[in-house]
Image (cartoon, rainbow, N blue to C red):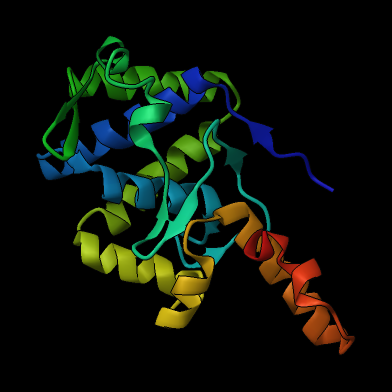
Length: 196
């Protein structure tokens, strides 16, 4: 069993700053909270440049991803310490978009910070994800992440609405095992989050 590294807030902030800075440098605009959440999801939960879900996430953030109708989401503002602390990291929120002050400097600092903590592979993968999925519209990225999670149907989306992403992925793993074994399983036992 492999151990998933749980990131402290400062490291999570560096990861977010890296995504914002690289996005801003590549596309010459800020990144919306929705798009930022999807890019983080793809960087943490996929492999093969966003093509396949990992069995386990690369890292865990101090805040959990939750599934909404628009796909996986995470409270970016909360991760950045809220309105009172966001500025101390050089992050600026204007309207719905996030920017950083001193893009090139933030890129260097955030990348060096992650690499110094043994997360160089994650830092490199984040850049590939932004390169590949950054040009997509919010709607296209939403559709892609929902398809990746197997949530194409409105009923399926409604069933997992506001469910923890981790709980959903764990449920999918259990469901696959049940299908392969052919045994009977109680749904309340398999998906306790749905029956609370």
